[in-house]
Length: 324
Image (cartoon, rainbow, N blue to C red; front, side):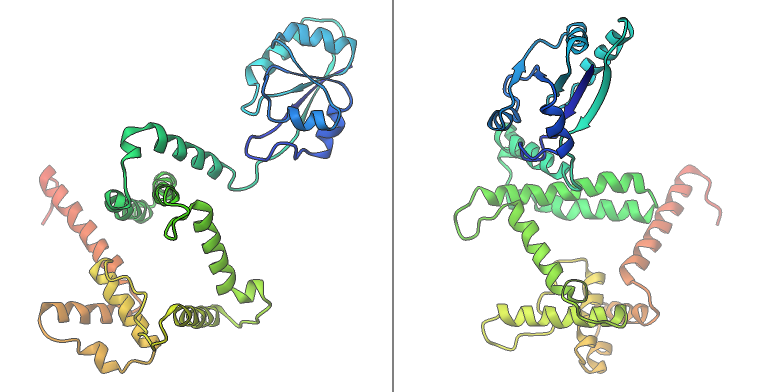
């Protein structure tokens, strides 16, 4: 005789079970200790009765000695009960064979569904989370990516995992706030956000999704820029617009200068406009950005590296270990 455990995940719609799970569920007496198990209605439609019983390990083993028993585990699992069943089998003569069947599997990204659920709960039940707005969260939307960047610069990839989670939380938080404005025109939810970026990635990678032939990464970048330009034209009001449209002016100044220069140079803007932006310290910094780029360096990263080195020297001076 057999004692079969069928495990399912709450992240997959109930009723969508593997063939092995359906075979197991039809082969024995189906038991569970979960009165409102989400799979039960779908099994009932298929003519499979699910009995709700107490999670008595010894009793379950005895029943499995009489005839095949299928334990429909709760979506959150039944680890403690399964340990007890295993111990009970060791104490009986001629114990039943124990099998484990996956009724459904998590797909990649399944834990994002858990994050959506947690965010919904926080928005409803936590006073702090409930009162947040796009505007109140704006500082965190800037802060968290910088913390992720710092973990990359330090080579601390364990910290990067955590920091990326904080970045992801900001995206989900803003989408959750926007969802409350639905069905207003400016309302949206996390699926709208994900759908938009999926569409954009597919549209901007015709060499992957539409059979376009490319020679190398440079041609991929050229296609990307052309597609972006077409997108901007379609969104526009009929005017020609600017090659610099879409460059976020609120970003860090060095990164802003570098991005403006790149965009202008790709569009064929005369070189003298780049090398002669004006006068004063700002113009000198702008020229340093150009020089860094000409040497294949990222000016923002270079200044950050210099700043980190300065911080280390100050800390050495504070601890008395600095050597001139």
